[in-house]
Image (cartoon, helix red, strand yellow):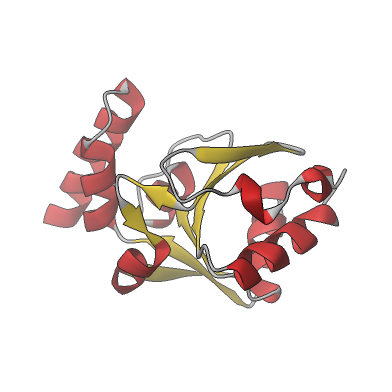
Length: 148
């Protein structure tokens, strides 16, 4: 199991409420492409954020121990944590929160665990909002997968 997978299993084992978005969600939806970070959106309830910080504090160098719940404001943007690789943690993306996205969760089986990731249709919606070339390439590939 690679480091990305270890992180996702760790979050799942500890019952963190999160959804994989970004590059790994593309991969889990069938659009295989390289990615160098993990993007997740988390439930912003205080209990979930405290548990997330606690779990990540024991992950590799544990830089998350410097975080607090106040570092996760109710606004757009990510908290970037860099351990073995960058981890971008969102509480809101394009106006959507975790609770708005639960009907768009699919699961990827990994080492006996069900990793929650964003389905292709909502991923397309998110990525269409972006001007990045990488995101536009993802949109085209995901739309192709949705057609077939």
